[in-house]
Image (cartoon, rainbow, N blue to C red):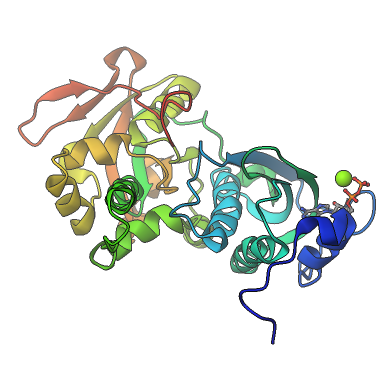
Length: 348
Ligand code: ADP
Ligand code: MG
């Protein structure tokens, strides 16, 4: 067995040696992948008449902090967030490319752990790693993933397309990833103040997991197909519900009304928000990185999914002039603000 504490410098391995090492355990499983890693370009033969492509870049110090994000989770998350964008088009992901910029701080073993996470996600979402690029970085770690998916033209769901009086739906629950990040940040501060402080994470396992190991809701995409429901518009929640509602609103040319008492908030998220002196509703509206799906359906389709345990009906679309608002429990109407994460000011 390999010694766990062994450290092989990347310079000893060289670029090609590293690429061989990190890609050797990947196998392609999709029929649309004719040729994967190893040539100048991958060769694909899509089986559906539309392909969708999406890219996301994760930069150390901006999108993640390696002092509390394990490399394996980071690899998993890099794939999951891209698959989530494919899911948001109501498409099925098929291939990914992964490009990394590494500083000499990283050993071969560290890169292997990152790729273990990437491999776990590729297997979870049945996507083939078909290429990428490997280069050096003078500062932090950068990972850029491109995901490619397929969909029949008739099933494609865009941000535009919602109709008047459509029902607004959201999968899962909201605000958990944001509260998980608050917990991780607090424990980091505690540890920096006194390294003998042991991080207290067990109590918060679920929300910390929501932050560190988000899942793309491919299960919802498949279930909507099974139930014969095509969303009239769809987006994934990366920047917070309010911000994504604004995107659907702008692209579909409609106003939206959502109801406070319909917002899905998990008990641990709620209690932790209160513990931190935050308003749980604000966390659900503006907390980022839940990677749930926000979509609209025609009223006629409601009966097909009304009993789904993990789809919540939070409001309806209305005339653009009526605007975007939240109806509180006391029936007050509060205009929504698109308070997405500002990537230039704070971590997201
Ligand atoms: P080229 O010089 O033609 O760009 P590379 O030597 O960069 O080729 O890459 C060789 C093969 O390895 C290509 O198929 C490329 O897509 C793949 N590859 C390179 N880096 C990575 C990576 N980090 N992850 C996955 N595949 C990679
Ligand atoms: Mg290259």
